[in-house]
Amino acid sequence: MGAWNIPAGLDSWEQVSAQIESELRENFCPRETVTSIIVAADEIFANISAYAYGGGNGTVEVESRTVPLEHGRYEYSLTFCDSGIRFNPLDAPKYEKGSLARQKYNSGSPGGFGIHIIRKKADRLSYEYEDGKNVLCFIKFYDSEL
View 1: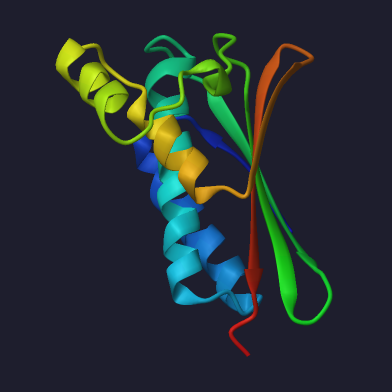
View 2: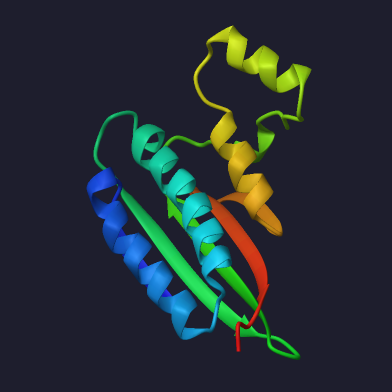
C-alpha cells in the first residue's frame, strides 16, 4: 500500500507512475495490465492537474492498495483525492463506437474522451464528494503472472 500527497502538476506524474509500476510488479501484475493501469492513472492525474484548481496550485492525494484474493487473483485500487473544484467525471456521457463519439469529436468541445479511456480500463470506478474533496476510486482485478 502506498499513499502520496503531491503537487497537482504534470511534473509530479513521473513519481506517481514509478511508484504504481513498482507496486504492481512487486505483486506479480502482468505487464499488459500494468500498462493499462498506468494509462488510466495518467488520464486521471492529468485531468486533476489541469482542471481541479483552475490554474492555481493544489495537491493530489493518491492511495494505492493491492489485495490478494483467491487462486492468484488480485484487486488493485487507486484512489485520487483533490480539494479542487467539485467535479464528478462519471457524469460525463458514455461514448460508444460510431456516431456519438464522432459527434463529440466533430463538436470541437474539449474533453470527454479521457473518462472514456478510464472507464474502459477499470473494472470498477466510483466517485464521491466527501469533506470538500473529490474522491475518485479506480479498481482493476488481475491474475498473477506466476
